[in-house]
Length: 438
Image 1 (cartoon, rainbow, N blue to C red):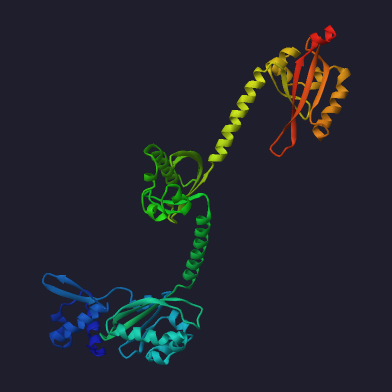
Image 2 (cartoon, one colour):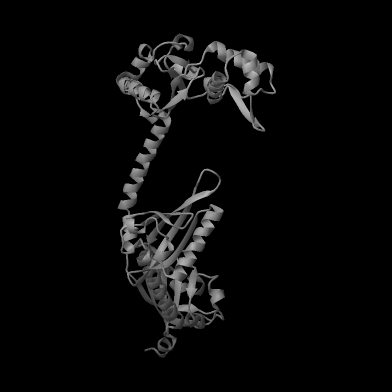
């Protein structure tokens, strides 16, 4: 049914003069049309949003709609909006769409879309677009992406059947510029793909845990540690991979990350294939953009060998310390500045000093003046690599001023790069042998 503009105007004029609203009987009395015709017109005006209806008892009361006209809102929309009638003539186009077509809106109104700049703007896509418009006139709604080859723009298009103001069937075309979003999505996809390639090639355990403690992502290496493939773990709870006590601790750590949003670092053992292996864990909360935390990104590195090496080193250092402290010879570690760094009990007894007193002195303080110059020369040779070790017999001056003879062996101590950082002096008291002349 096509509405008569004259009757439509009369109904709207009567309602404008009676803002409190009129029932259908009052409207028929004012404009002299039959009740059925008035009912059809009012139904169409209701559908198009030009009038409003409320119930008063059994009666229907009609009044002009007090909403902002839809056309006014569409005109300022950032979307590209056009309405066509059943003859494919443009009955409305907003400024955004008109600007895209580089044609004033007034020049487009009333024209068949096939004879407008839409043809060249959509180029190879126009025929398919027009077919969708015709289907819309027949009641079929459609949406999808359109990317005209001659335009550097990508649209998301919606074509929807529409009731026009005059009651005629029409169709609305709404285009949303999604070019930037598509580019951003593509960059994000490429970034995620690069990340996924790196994650899959990594020998670290890489994973993403959601707020429900379910695994959102896990790389193949991490899944393999648990004897599974990623698909068997993704979507399931993280805790089921671990013994209950360990799972409980990890849930607490994850809960803290979600609550605080602060990255964390920790080390701990995880049972793998029947053996306990040590891992270095880094957890990084991922924001959801709304002030909360969406998920937690984690990287765990197997540091079992490092821990074993550290344990072996600690054991070795403990053995050395026990031998050093309880050895039958006097032992001292001397730095490059010739100061004592460490002395054992026997060395203190030989020199008559406490350990604390010796650690404030240099080896020159306890060396007899007659041997000092030679000692300095030999130690310098040791540091320069001229000799592998230094052996001699020399006199020492004790704290009380007495002298003793010692058999001295000096060995270099090196860092991991092989550089000499200090020396180890081993002293045997040979005073008695020297005094007896043997």
